[in-house]
Amino acid sequence: MDIREIQNLIRFVAKSGATEVKLEMDDFKITIKTTTESGAPETTSYVQHVPLSQPQQQAAAPQASAASQPATPAAPVADESSRYITIKSPIIGTLYRKASPDKPPFVEVGSTVSKGDVVCVIEAMKLFNEIESEVSGKIVKVLVDDSSPVEFDQPLFLVDPS
Image 1 (cartoon, helix red, strand yellow):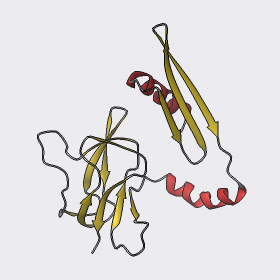
Image 2 (image 1 turned 135 degrees about the horizontal axis):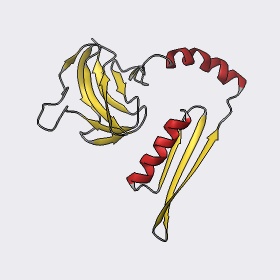
Image 3 (image 1 turned 120 degrees about the horizontal axis):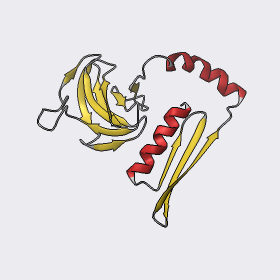
Image 4 (image 1 turned 180 degrees about the vertical axis):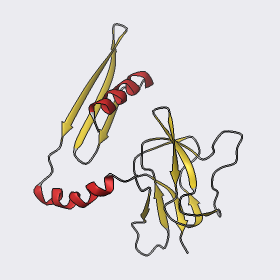
């Protein structure tokens, strides 16, 4: 995250009315607190770089090359006995299951998706990001309601790849 993205995040938090936001990534933590004193808004930001130990840096090196590619929102479910694949949120924002209120949802339980099909959109900082399926299969469960806030790496859909 560069300084411009941090500044945009600070402005977004200040305008949203939130009093405190904490964001933790692999190598840094950001805490943004907003308070009102005598009618004047004040924003305080803390950025803390978290040093990684040497073994973790070596393990993170292969991921750095993957980070230059687009985020992959699909990952295997933690439960090895399950045959389903989880589509996860690559960003923080508000999830919308439809392109607009008068349109049908992108996918429903039972829908068949192919790799690259849009399964939802996530609004982050006034930008709508299409979330595409990284696997082909059948949607077996929708884990998030329409117009719900989502966190980074939050499971959104379960897909049966068979």
